[in-house]
Length: 267
Image (cartoon, rainbow, N blue to C red; front, side, top):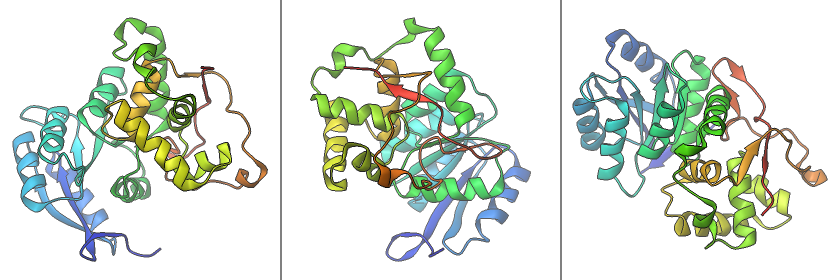
């Protein structure tokens, strides 16, 4: 694999924010074995994590949900608020699968969510994926999120009325994003060019005031645009090849898995 670089040809700058020194040391050893990554700083508290992310201009920050001194969600929110251009991406590392934790992390601005017992190779993949600007969520977390969401509709923050500004095609595209499709896969599914699919996604992000694709997924669930239980419509024949394992919901905490069965709700 070619080394992934995102700034001036240099390696990815990663900050590790975790309250346990042994965990930080293990992550550092793992990441610094990669040719395209360097650990630019470590942090043991939320305050230190925010400062390290901003001082080093980190590309990716690994944040423990239970980070001492305010918690991981607050740390993520402060980093994202300070870097509104999205130049710093966040992977939240979790030991809980509650909807409060998952929704809270996504709303704060995390673009990757993993359980802390994830396989080492999956953690490395996650860093590369979010650095490219893609959202990533382990299916185990996605399944819990959907189950809790469906059981507690009173927690909705986005309603179908909020989607009225979208065109019919944009609604369809948002639903496909929520089902885990990349721009390339959306293009194949709708038989349009990748540029057209990307334009639809960008317009939906703008109209819904979503920070990124991860928040677009949250809005799609909350507005009832997607729901679990049915398979997606079959894509054109050329899309039948095995897709890459680096999209939203493509891998779980203990290995590669398929996308959860989700389907767009008819407009």
